[in-house]
Length: 196
Image (cartoon, rainbow, N blue to C red; front, side):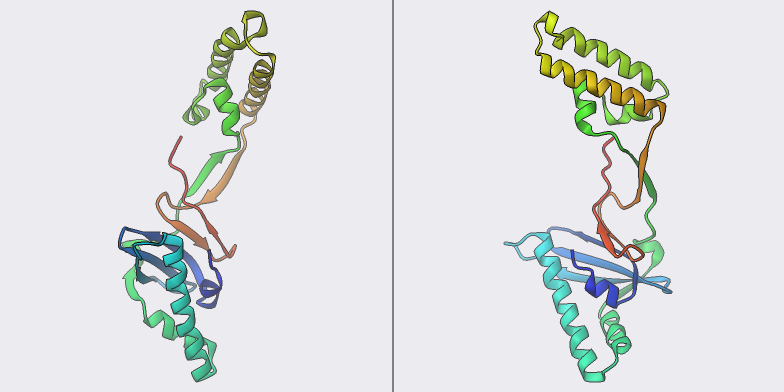
């Protein structure tokens, strides 16, 4: 996703989202207490990313035209921001909450048939051991299972027990329904999964 326009507009936070008929880009520049909302129409035959690029290209062209006319980048940025509708910060974009995502790979959870939501349980060690026993009864080579599958299950069991003793999380900010741009890191972050 494009970042050049957002950097030019001195963006602290931004969010991109869409509906069937519109693409929406909300921007909060550094030092501002309001949202600048840009809206573009969706094309029936294109995807939201293409529509987003079309909208940002038009905004970029407006910025370049004003920059060439005035020879002042600040004035060009102000010109582009005047093309947006303004909203109070409480109307939509606020700094998204911090989310802790377990570092465990889904393949390890799938091996033992454990749900991601179980990782937050106080009984996690017992859940891991019970799930392991159930899978061993099905996949142990002495009981007609495949050795390779059993080795994967045993490996996942060891990793999950180790993780349960010393859990590690990835911390990131994000919205559940919008792409989020962090001006400090100068990058877009995907919507945060709500699956547990």
